[in-house]
Every structure is written in C-alpha cells, then in structure tokens.
Image 1 (tube, helix red, strand yellow):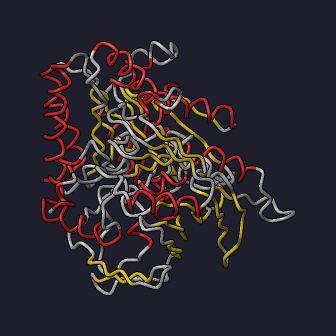
Image 2 (cartoon, rainbow, N blue to C red):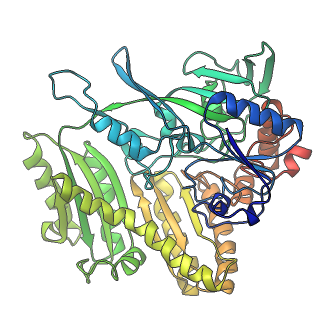
Image 3 (cartoon, one colour):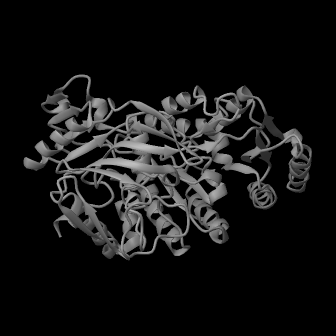
Length: 504
C-alpha cells in the first residue's frame, strides 16, 4: 500500500484529492493512502483509529455535496479497487461481484461483452444510470444513487445483493441481503472478531418518495440497507454484488418540445398514465435551453420546455404507441414535427447527450464565476415531493425566483416528481440569497411530505436541510448508530451531520 505523508498543500500533483464536483474545497490532510486490497484498508483504518485521525474515503470524486472533500486528517482513495470478479447466477437472477473502485463506465462495457445465455440473444444490464458514468460503484452504493431510469428500476438499493464492509476498527462484515434483520428497531451485528454490536434503529418516518437523505431506518429492516446510503460514515465498502435486469429488446427515445411549461407538464401527467412501457421521464425548462443554446444551435428557438422519455416497445405495439403519443402532443400544443426521436444507438446517444450536457454546462458556468468569486459553489435543490404536491412545489420555486431575476434552471426526473433546481449566482450577493432560498425550498418540501435530497445525499453541504427534515432528535438517533459502529467517529467525519452530534 502506498501512503504519502505530509500536508497536501505542498504535495505537488495531489491537490485534486481535496475536491469533488461540489466545488467545495477546504482543509489539508496529513496522509494520503492508496490501499490495494482489503487487508490494506483494515490496517490503515486501525492506524488512524489508534491515533484518532479522521479518514475521508475518496473514490470517483463525482459527488456534488462535498462528501469526498476532506476537512483534515487522512484521505484513503479506493481507486485501485478496480476488479470485476465475474457473473454468477442465483436462481433466475444474474449477479456480478466487483470491487468498489470500478466505474460505471467500466461496468457497462463489461456487461456489453458478456455472453449470458449461450446461443440465445438475451442480454442483461445494470439499470442504475447516474448522469456521471465515471462514478465508482462504491460511491453509488454509499449515496444510494439513482438516475434517469430510476422511474422504472428504482435506485441503487434495489440492486444490491451483498456487501463487504470494513469498520473503523478493522473488522470486516460480509452482508448478504435477506439474512440479517432488525427485531423491530433493535439490530444485532456479529463482527469478524466474534464481538456483538447492538444498534437501535432510528424511529423517524422516512418520506414516501425517492429519498437519499440520512440513514435508511425502518422497523424490521434488513442490515444491508443500513450501509446503502450511509455516505461512508459507518464503514468502507470494498466489494459489492449487484443484480442485473433483462435488457429491453427495443427502445425508442423521444424529446418533445413545447411552447409553454404548462403544456409540457400536462403532457407528462397524461403520458405517464397511458404509457405503461415508459422507462424514463425527464423535464427541461426554459433556463436549461438558455444554457444549452450557445452549444446547440439546432435547439428550437420558439420552444421553452421539453419532455425527454424512453419507451420499450415491440413491433406489434409500436404503431399504436406512437399514435397515442401523437394525439397527446397535439392536445398540448406540440406535434411529432416538434419532437426528436431515435431508434438507433447513435441517435439515442445524441438525444441523451442533451440531458447530460445540462449539468456539465452548469458546472462550467459556475467554474467561470468561481474564478472571480471563490466562495461561490453550486446551489442545487435535490427535492422530491409526492405526486399530488408536485405542481405546487414547482410553482413555489418560480414565485420566489422570478421576482429576484436570478439565473436558474429546473430539470431532471419529473417521472418521480423530482426536479433539480439549480441557481447560478453571478456574484456573492446572489450566492448568499440563493443559499437562503435553498433553505426556504427545503422547508416547503418537508411541509409537502417530500425529501431534501432525493438522490445526491447530504454530504457536508446539506446538514441544515436534513435537520429540517428529521429534527435534532432524528439526527441524534443517526449519530447514536454511528457511535456504535465507529466509536471514535473517524469515518467521513462531517458527512450527513455535524460533529456536535457525535460529541453529545
């Protein structure tokens, strides 16, 4: 194992380890560790525990809430954990076991080249498709990441079948889904050294929407779900076993443009009702178009919103499906002439690239602003609310943003009533106002029965929003879980909740 000792602000070539996609940057670390196997992880964690050195776990550094940004102490990169051990079949389900440093890109390419069923043409794929495909598997597990296809397939949690997790004292847990459950809210874990850890599961009620805020907590819950979405605060995930889904035989991708936001919203709700074969529903607002037009001159100039959707189809039902879509488009002031579509892989990728270009362009815009105003970072509300309250949430965003003439965009996973509200402040004054608004939006989302983080997690940026959601009592209950599994509080310190909860 390679360990570099010394303040990273004077170690040339390693400064990128102090940042992630949040653009949050602070602190120094005294140790950089690059373990090559699980034993290396165990030994380094025991070293840090004995010296009471906080350890930040780094992997793909693609997170947007500062989870991989170290405050101080040590940083352990899992980039060398890049092995895929292969496919196995459990009953009717195909699974893949792989190390946590494998990127989604690498995983997808592996599956494309895998022959699952001999002479038959059946293919399987991993359906979790976060926007940044360079994200690492361990990171997606630690944040319960989702993506465009979560409308049909759900988040990472749905596909995790087993984990290997190293605790801060070097004990290793091998956890298989369906094997260890809580008794009500009491959970016992037998460690590799034979000792027993007793955990009291928090009894707050999680919202009934897509959610990645804080520890998963439910009566009689499966142990594995405690670690999925825990943002590296309870243990270091070294290996993951993931289930695969059968790959659709035929997919068509459509991007329908509309002159007004209300047209797009109405189309979505009607389309969602009739298209039972839909895989993806995404929304782009006027602000997204304004960001993209300098790059994409062929975007329709008279259109102010769009719905992007993917549909599975068969040769038998394609004609009826397209006819139904055409009627809904006409009803909502659009048409097939105002819709881009694609069956072939190259056409599908071209349309999907528009979706991926939005966050990229936001980051590029903020990076330019940050050169002049270094304190600025991304202000992005990752809010989901129940379907019946979705339009009220969208209206509330606009009622607060429009009078202030802030640059913003609403885009994302409309299928799950989860839009990303991004404010792009142009100076420090707008930045501080944007932070105030984000807090206000979080309060509104909770009042509407929603979550303050549907897919990005909490990290170091969204502590106060999680407190709005669960209150101090809920955060104290989370901290008590961490104290049992990580008594010295060294793992990913500052993620999910402030240190004050560990010191209480």
